[in-house]
Length: 386
Image (cartoon, rainbow, N blue to C red; front, side, top):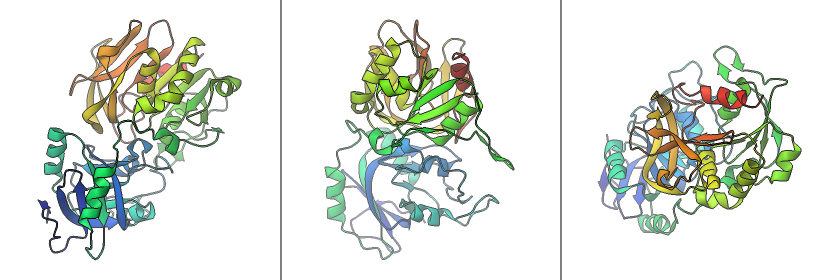
């Protein structure tokens, strides 16, 4: 049964509700955590990897609408977590969550969601909601789960309308690691678990704006020794670690707001000719440091099937993406070259700074979840550090 937008009176069997800031009320069945949460509603087109998506810090303060109808059907496990910090507040799915069907599962999705304080809504017409987002943009909303179907709709609506939204919001501080630490562990393999980190090799200091763990694992796989530092780490502390290169991670929120403390650090690193590689938010911050501007997108890019054209040779990479802001290609200054573009909407997906060993891409090349077309970027970065 699919619930749809209706009146403020819950239909029979409704234990969950989504209240948009414009007053639209969408009823469904709640699962996971009991309570309410506010955020921006987006949609993700990936067919796999929902656990990785739900634990990606880039989704902090967001409610994810999965366009693929069967979510939760392979359960969850402790190996597919991408972080232990704040991430998506909840998710919206079409079909009711069924029991797991994977030998790797150790916990049902419903139980896992409750344990991680995330709210789920099933029975929603996700196609209609996705079309609404594509037409009108990503709305602010409140989602709520009550096993007894009791909701204060006016109060929920007020919360949705009073929430300021992601534009101008700095979230990296909330999701960044608080201390420096040496990263240990490489990519996961079936039957083997997580690989080992290299004992030597180029030293990469990774600035954590809300990174996925698999990014650090892939830097390790490419041969780097990785030290992870908090988002507000000053240049003097970074340089005291004697890095061969600096990595700028993904993360949530408005890059212009995060840039208040991040951009001066990146600019100083560029002046020191430090090799730099940025992805997602890190790519946007690199763009700001180089003199470009960023913009909030109408609907954003979120999924594991996004085609990106590499301009140097015309190769098309299928990529994993999660971003609601982008570097404005029209503002790229002299000395900054556009290297990749989205084949969905032509938006910027990569830059390179002439005369510097510094580049960034908008997508997530570590493929967790997603295709493996872009692993070469880690090897390219580590290879330039020798």
